[in-house]
Structure formats: structure tokens, C-alpha cells
Image (cartoon, rainbow, N blue to C red):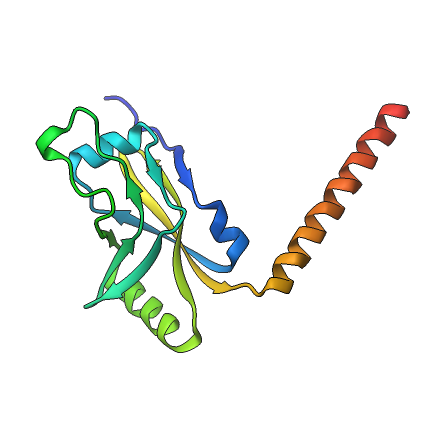
Amino acid sequence: MAEKKTGNKIIAQNKKAWHEYFVDEKYEAGIALYGTEVKSIRGGKVNLKDAYCDIKDGELFVKGMHISPYEQGNIFNKDPLRDKKLLMHKKEIMKLHGLVAQKGFTLIPLSLYFSGSHVKVEVGLCRGKKLYDKRDDAAKRDADRVIERSMRDRNKAD
């Protein structure tokens, strides 16, 4: 028998989420998709930029995730922006629902990846950043870049 691959192949990442939010916790969730959507995802035709998660009737849905229609899919293609159901344990969903309702957290999909043959979504429990937080992050990133450059130049000179 053949062994299963154990690596995760990242399909898409939501870089905007890391800029706009503080990510406090991360959760892994499965996602309910149709065949043509999976084929489009395999081709990398997915966008998480404006996506967010919502809890409705005890179920978790991702909204605003765009999966381009599969070119050979014809009548089997689904709406690219339809709400997609995320698959998590009921206890986890209820815990997240309590945090989102009370403390002002938001659920944001951070990345989409293959775990074996299954498509998984990494969902982040996030708090919004203020403008000054974004400036601090940019200043820190620039300072780290300058330090790294000077260390590299110093090592070249030796």
C-alpha cells in the first residue's frame, strides 16, 4: 500500500488580514466544496482578500471568498462568491461564537491549503488594529530590515 503524504501545500494566504488585524488564535477547519470548486482551487484560482467568517444557526460559514469558475466545468460551476460551510466541532464553534459576541473578535480566514487530499482553511480569531498599531508594525519591519542589511554588509566586509 502507498503511504499518504503528510505535508501541507498552501494554496492561498490572506496577507491583508495580518496587516489589518492582531491574530490571537488559529483554528483549522475543513470546508464543504463541490468538485469544480476543488479543481479551480488546485489551479490556484482563489482569493481570500475580503473574506470573513460568520456563525449562523450554530454553523460556521466563510463569506466573500472568491473561487473562480472552473473553465471546463460548464453547467456544474457554482457561484464564485457563494457562502461556503466550514467544518468544525460544535464545541469549538460555540466557543468562537461566545468570543465573537462578547469581546469584539472577528473570524478571518488566514490561509487555504491541502492537507493530504482535503482542502483546509486556517481561521484566525482576530482583533482589529488601529492606525497607530499599523504604523508601529511598519516602523518595526523597516528597522528589522535595516539591521539585517547592516549585519549582512558587515559580514561581507570580514
